[in-house]
Length: 373
Picture (spheres, one colour):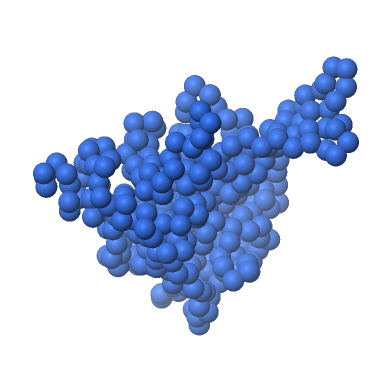
């Protein structure tokens, strides 16, 4: 067995992907698709978004080609592991008419997936969704089937974008847990990948790759690159007492101010790697012979989301934004024992009007009713 740390060359990275494929995994990694970086099926290292960097800020996402040979210079796109482990639409069961009608549960078995290139914030998000779908009295069978057959190969961040604030949440830029292997890409003096083992499955995989023992230089270079990424982050979220802060400020004027800009489009919930709300949708064939129930992503920004007793409860945009942010940063802690935010910044980048979760929280902290009354 190899030690807990090893080094892979560029050829070794390709060997990693091809070994996973030969083991029967569908390899999913960051690839250039339709003008954005998407998590797509790849067959080799050449399928990765090599030589690209992303620029992100509130309501803005832009890709730029570079002369660099780096495979993982792009931080992330709109996708996360959520799209694969908890798909936007999936069948729950079908009904075939007859005497009696026949109910057929959906088959959740599928090809195992190996995620390569997940950032530490997204690895943390998978752990959050694990608590949501697997740790309660009811285990979601569809999620469990996908999760049980998945591998996670994280990539530690060596650059950030302006919407990142993982250091405030403690989820990055270095992955701590939740991965099978974690890579740190080092370009100088030679282009290599420092590999950290996070599980027995990861150790067994690494043992079959052309890995070598790391030198002190590459370990120091990797540590310096990740440290520089942490230092470069300019966005911060003060989480001290944040649950109590939001509970005490449910009628804060800031909810109305943010509602003046918020389109209640739900983009933040769709891009968020931890949001898990869904709604059942029933459809039937034109001849009435079959019907199907599907589970479809839902958003608390939708007017119908709070529909009960003949009408929606949250009619105002202010109440819907308050519901989302308070759940994400406060009531989630009561439900699942952790925050629902991992500091990835996607809700900032992919908000059409650039609403910033950290700034909205700061505004409430600055004019906390408990101290300003």
